[in-house]
Image 1 (tube, helix red, strand yellow):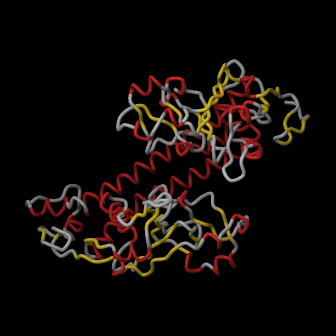
Image 2 (tube, rainbow, N blue to C red):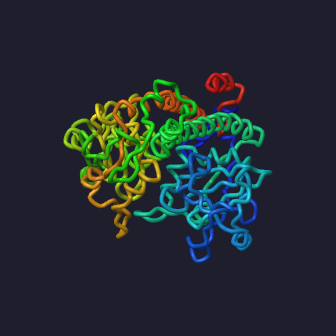
Image 3 (tube, rainbow, N blue to C red):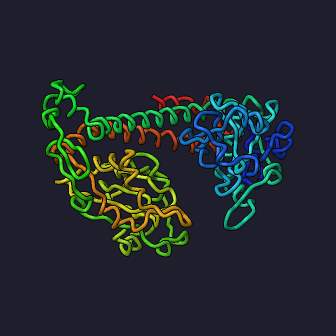
Length: 465
């Protein structure tokens, strides 16, 4: 590969690459906006049908399959021109315009929303997987953000996207580079799916023990609780009794959150943390994007200085705290794991937290409780629908919530049983970070053909082992 280079809008690129506008590398009508809002309304959504990809479902080059809206077969036929094919690339049209995802075979035939743009490359010119990684280059992301229109809400259109220049090597080089990077992404996806399964197992166990009361019912009926050792089974009663919240296992008590809370606190006012206060390293800021799983996502933070965090000490959190969202994506609940990457974090303005008195309540138990249907119902019962959805008076309201809680020894036993699950999740996350760092390091050199697959095959094999 020639060492000569040329300067482009993306910085230095090898001189022997071919350059063309994106529109000239796509099939006819290959760059297309999703349906107008008048063509598709929320009331058109059905429980079972064809999924629609929105901006919220664009992960890091993968479609996120949770909470997908769906439409009927009739609407799918009506909106057929917006049907996706495997190999299409879906862009965010508004907001985070550098977000994109490659459509996989399992998503063939799905639709995309009006807030998205679809790119369908010509297979004789570009490998779709390679192009999706080209769009993931940091230099491309910076460029697409710079040419988006609108200051407060950046947006793209077909003209803007059609005119972007693409620098590409021959198809064989494209395919080899995409193959190597996809190997890493496939393992990352598998590890994330494994973690979702592990978290679902823990939540199912909580539901069995503390919502459906399966061990209590089994002992009442003279049976040994399924899959439970004798020491754990002995911690459950064998009957129910009345309480102000209805039938409850005998000996369990009704209390308010404030009865076992060491502290309940809010994130700071928005004026206290601004974009201009962010620094390259320091105290990480937890926002809603970190609360999508049961355990706080411990990567990709904005930071503020230690001095700034000291001034916001009432909004600082630590391992063992349970964090909630009170405005915007309300209902989010996540636990800051005992092996969190940092000793201190600060919340953003839309979050609040609960720190338990661990001799009375474990954070694992309370986090799982507020993930249940009953817990979510209680958490959202004080929601205001005026403007941005929000929980009114979140701190005082959380303190006032009543619930039936088991003895502390049983809460602790549940935390012990779940620790192997959460430890597995954290180990997988560490592996994901390793793979992500390797992919991101290889991306700028593999995509323009500056590295050959043979040169990185051993490093990729070792990372995947």
